[in-house]
Length: 191
DNA sequence: TGCCCGATTAACT
DNA sequence: GTTAATCGGGCAA
Image (tube, rainbow, N blue to C red; front, side, top):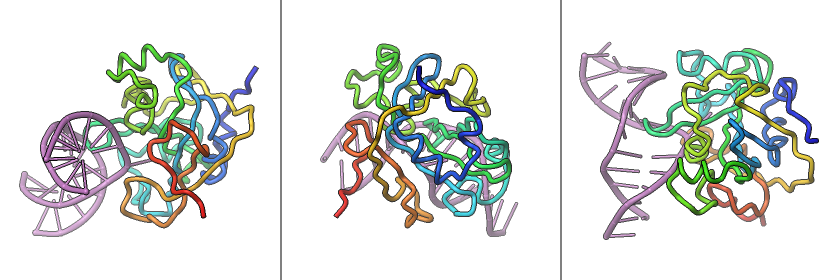
C-alpha cells in the first residue's frame, strides 16, 4: 500500500519538497495521476505571488503547510499549488503536469480532447481535468477530496528555469521527470 | 477610478 | 512563429 503524504511532508523548504513530489500520486475525487512537473516559488523572490505581502488572493500561502492554494491565471484558467514551509514563509509548489492514471474518461469529458498527453500537461489543463477551482482554495491536502501518495519507485529528476515568468527567471526551480511524455514543455537537454 | 499585465491555452499564419 | 480570450491584483493618480 503506498504511503500517504502528511502535512509534515510539506513543512520543509519548498526547494526540498518540490523534487520529492516528482513521481508522487495526486488524486482529486479519485481522478488524477503521477506528478511529473512542478515549480517552486519562494516568498523572497519577486516571481512569487507572496513577494509583496499578504492579500485576499494569496492569504492561503501565508497559512500553514499542507494546504492547496488555487488562483485564477490570465482571467481564464485555474492553477493549483501546495503550500510549503513553516507558517508565514508563504512559499508554495506549482503543480504543472500530471501523467494521467485514474479517471481518464472524466478527464476527457471535462477537457474535450482525447489525446491523453493533452489532458493534464500544463497547470491550467490539469485543473480543468481534475475540476479544481477557487472553491478548493485552502483545502487540506491530506483530506478528501485530495489524496496524495509518496512515490515508491526511483525517478530521474531534471531541473530548469521556470515557465511563463518575467522575474527571477534565472532560478532553476522547475523540476520534472526525465523523459516523461507528459511534460507541459520539454526541458532543455543537459550538456 | 483607471490602467497595465500576468505562474496560460488554443487557434491561428 | 503570433495573438486573442478574459479578469482580478497591484499600483499610480
